[in-house]
Image (cartoon, rainbow over all chains, first blue to last red; front, side):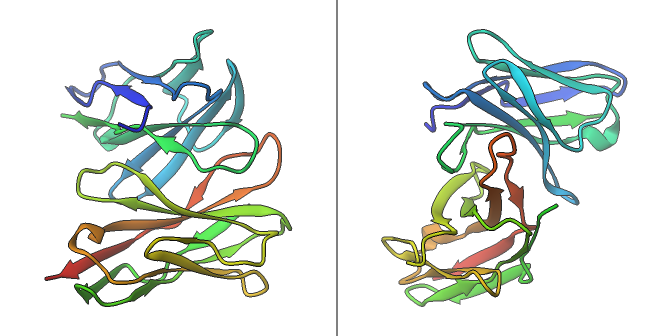
Length: 113
Length: 116
């Protein structure tokens, strides 16, 4: 157990639907990062939150949004889902300063049918 | 923008042998961190080793060591006495030492297979 909890582990949904992925960071970590891993795109950075505030955005579609709550858990909302959104979505957390690597959750496998 | 390149999509080696995975990166930053992550079939991302660019000494973690060549922007991973459990995808990653820009940029990965 890495200490980063992601739910659900698997999700199957239809095109056009909306889903919410949840992440609880490791205790003491203020930063949460979301990554998308698909077969043809590798690990793509989506968004970074630090202590409730958006810190950086990557290649995140307008149909996707995220937030980090006061208790530091984060949610990634994916709407108007398309087949191409099928991927493994990782959440990771870190102590912001110090250059330590991330601690990753086990991911949410999203399948859009 | 930073880029990370892993030129070996797949490698295989006999158990107990030594294998080296290559990684090069491009950046204009002078201070940064480099990482190797392992992703076994379970898909969990596991930190293997990290290197701080301002340290000349190469990092080591048990059977894992790196060869960090800052001028050449090269960061290879050596696995000694390879074990079956080392079979996984290995990702090289770069993180700038810039407050407010802590995201990791990953390479495309090397699939390593340890043959019994």
